[in-house]
Image (tube, rainbow, N blue to C red; front, side, top):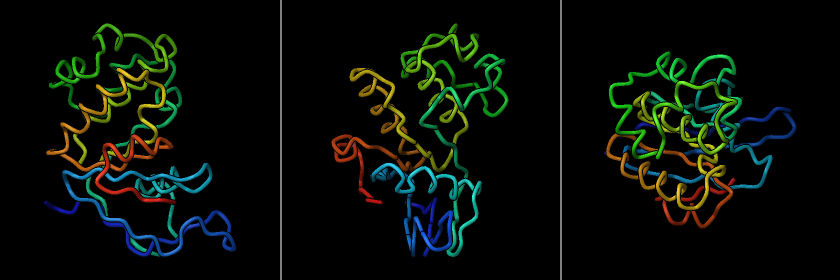
Length: 189
């Protein structure tokens, strides 16, 4: 299995005298799911921002292959005045869209709508669809199933786990049972 993410000796804080991370190291290989668990404010989402290079670490290095993210709040991850399909086509090849739609239990017609016309659960699954179609090596999942009911949550997690031959995943979750069920390793922050 090849290494797709290497975080070494990472230190970061919004204030120099209060570090969220000090000397944090994480590695991820293709085929792995690692769950990141911690209290609100522990830096879980900030870690994703650092991996995506939206923030700069105080020290340490981050080497990451192609990454895409599923955000916790799907409404903030889509532009309100463009159809979902337009936004997906802007960043991803849609050749495999119908296979993913089936596994995410979504109708194609929903993608022709604006984000506010969908439920939170539908929009979250559209966000997962977009991230998967981007064909990342590293998929960053920030509470990806929190807006979904239990049946859909299980279907989505099974679909994600069936995609592990193509990528590795970092999963932020408050659901310790979900982490224990799907993750190769649980990282406590």
